[in-house]
Image (cartoon, rainbow, N blue to C red; front, side):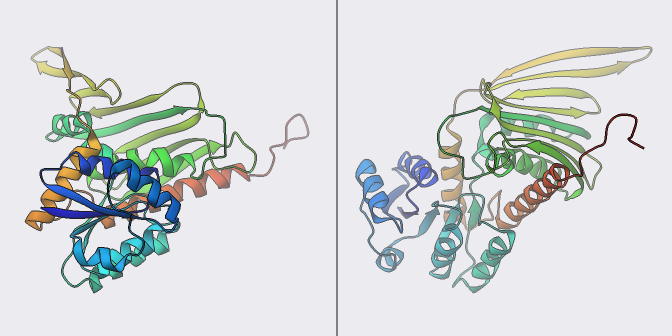
Length: 327
């Protein structure tokens, strides 16, 4: 039986803890730790697991660690677990900066044994996304378009910009789909709250294999949308992650004519966080490399940073002169 500890009692830690708890036949939650003791006690009480006052005794008994907490806390928590020989599942973004995220690679090198270090991009394990990847696996990819929108919400200013919070999932999808780095980036966006993070972003990426990706992420409107379109040389495929529906139109060529074939696939519900947790336990038990590792997560974080820099560059452009005096 795998013994797991939860490091970080925030929203991410709770989500992953509940996912692992659903795998009680393979895993036991040995406790939860957070620098904020009250938060750790509250989550421990809700889940019916021990509260860990300090980390060292927990490291002695655990096999794996689920690293949540705030972005500022994650590097230190992940390094501590890795250096004590635990395998880790880490919530993205890995750290507040790319430089701190890179520091996790040195912790992997210093680990007592080769660790399993997986990054928690839940949607990589979503049944609709898995089916979409399977449908285009043997095709020549031309373009990807993704739209991801959450309704604008009243209350405190969000901690993360919309690129890091929402678009990161689609960045990971594109990188996993092509296996290629980004060759060029253009982006634009805007803030809804003065002084707050970016609330609406549109990015245009060109990958090294010439695939074109256009990504939209927003929490400035009224709609909730999670859709991905993939264009190949022989098909146009749309996946709606909320309704778990895939619609594809394929073109077949015959002498003198073209024919279109429509396909509709409805997927059963599976909790991606639970599927991801099961995959992580499998990687841990078999000592195999995870689908989404630290390197890919750092590449996603670097891509998000490049997009944000492009947005800021446009936002701070000199005011355009209008009228007959403009020349």
